[in-house]
Length: 272
Image (cartoon, rainbow, N blue to C red; front, side, top):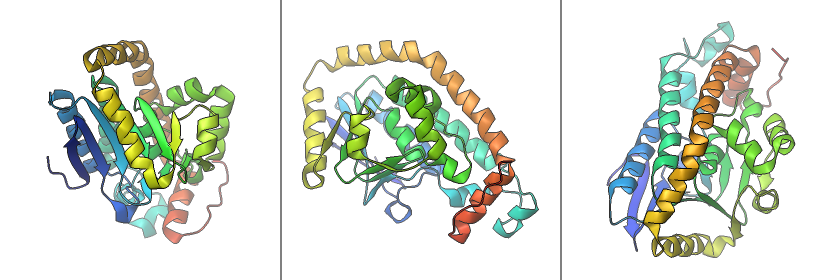
């Protein structure tokens, strides 16, 4: 399969999906979400594929949503944001693409591994959280990051993160949005393992190939059984996140966060 923003290969019954916007630190736009969905559909329906890896090209797994595309959803250009530009249809389209991609990650009846090769921030971390297993390179850095731009976590992360690390730790990670190391992620139970940078992808391939030689039909059934338990709550979380996110788009702090991003400075939030 050929994509604009992804690389896709199959080796030893393992599909490797690689985010391929290295020049943007693999920031994700609406079209890229659609391509991720298409790649997952191929994983689900191709009998030659028994497991999959999702990783990133370059020094980032993914730094989340593409703020340049976010600005294109404003009513007016960046210079007019101060005058009250609002998020419009472009952001809504991304929201729909996110939701269906999240559900596809959980409903694909084959094990999917997130291989965090570098930075995994915001939506990039959220994609990993929705995979079945997560491994990180020793130099990788992770973070929810959303509050750095006065935004709300999405992709069901407000449901998944407290279940993984506990409610108070989840609130700490979300409220402050600070980066943390792969080693800290392992200690808090957020990821399954850490491998040295120089052998990272080879080690993740070994894990994937071990799964691929196992009873993948039964693994898929077990995965879907877990998904059925989680699905209603994940959909509810996605809807709640969307409602909160669109409220955040109307806030003064979000406008300041977006301006600060383009002006390459720290934002000055006022709490409204």
